[in-house]
Length: 288
Image (cartoon, rainbow, N blue to C red; front, side):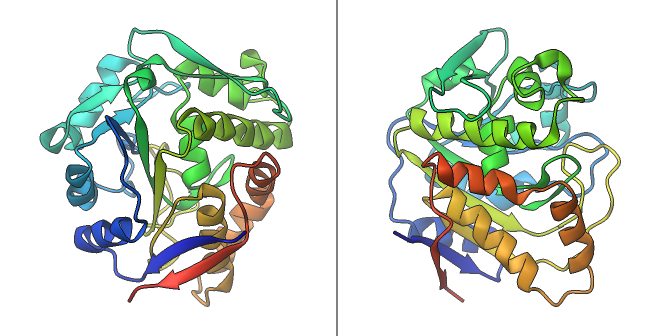
């Protein structure tokens, strides 16, 4: 059965709030709002002001996890400093999910590559999750969207190494590439199942560089902004974003497509569908 993906070309806090409302999903209890806080030096990450109206509406707590690589977010102390410099704690309550509380281990019995996912233990405080993603390229994953936020984004610092290493943390940067992509799908499946349907997903297609917001030195955006998309299905959502890139006539489109295809990025979407995370079949509902 196809999922509904709502789409608007307008990218404003008000339109993001409106498109979230179109989902008709009330997130219960305490809501974790997963964002990308942005590496220091990165010029492309989405600022907190863009999300504020929607985060306030769900009374959410912005959550993040520490990184597996050296930088401005690899310890809780440095990460919280980065969060302050980027203005997140000016507007929201913020929690680093893997800050001193260990990991919560989620089993993935049907995982293609990994059978366990190590996420920040702080996730246990929350009843539901709103996943806010910046859709763009990625140096390793090919692209970054909702599935990356669910996998690498929610994983603890150790969990990120475990996913990147396809179950062998020591192989963080040297594991078989497709096994890493499949591990992301496995990890995403575990988080979706953990929240038992109490989740919603928004992707914003702006500032679309071939590089991720985790890059301190990133290429400038190569394509014009496309819009905001929202769904209750993260697979449909990412597939719809990829389709919009492929259908674009923007002169920078080929550069982003080359990044996606050279890293086999669509494999993660295919694998997530195979695990039952969602469907690549969708109905695009335009609200402009």
